[in-house]
Image (cartoon, rainbow, N blue to C red; front, side, top):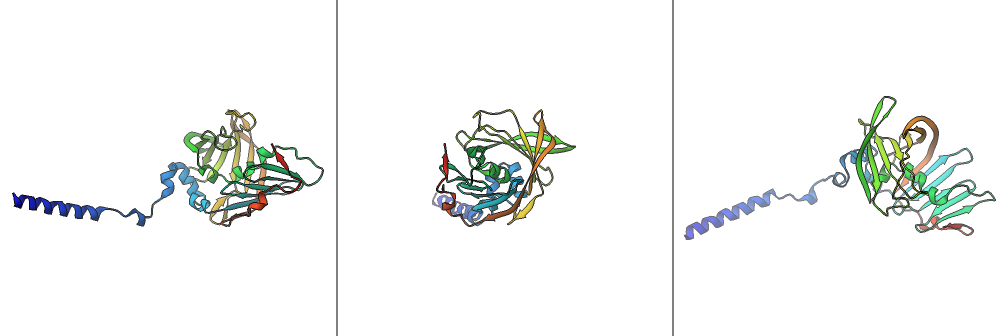
Length: 262
């Protein structure tokens, strides 16, 4: 009996020793964390544009939009989405709490500052902007345009996320390169309800800025039956700057003479 117990003890010790040999130390493994967080299709799109991890290292984004009446310069803090838009006759800012507007002369701003203060940033920061928290992903029907087929990823938001959680987007990408080609989007800011009307932007002239692939040109299209049919207008983005340095918080605060938008 004693011999049997001794034999069982030896077998148990050997088994434990072998089990320890098979244990993996994951702290030393090079794991792809991105694919464990995001669906495979959107992960491949992020990777084609330089990687979501590289994007997340950036603290600020600055871009200039060329416009007929003068250039428009937007600065955004990527971590809290505070923003500053410098126009020839107006300045719009968001300090994390309030949207404000300052007129530089007697000309009145004709747009909606609360709608516009982050609009172009969201369009320009695609596809990385759809890596935010509170986003739901699902496959969408591919887009067929001029003989090409673009697979789609539909993006929607959890309740209470952002100014317009009812907004929806579809990112269409090149099936070979996985680079983003089109964005379809709805606008719900004014109605506060889900919309069935889709708008389309074509992304092109990609450029490498600090290892991230970002667009130079966004082209809006005329739409019929919720599909793009013909080019409407281009917006060109220049002087792109991405930085790992956090911008000064004071630049986003409302200056003397600015109006807080209710």
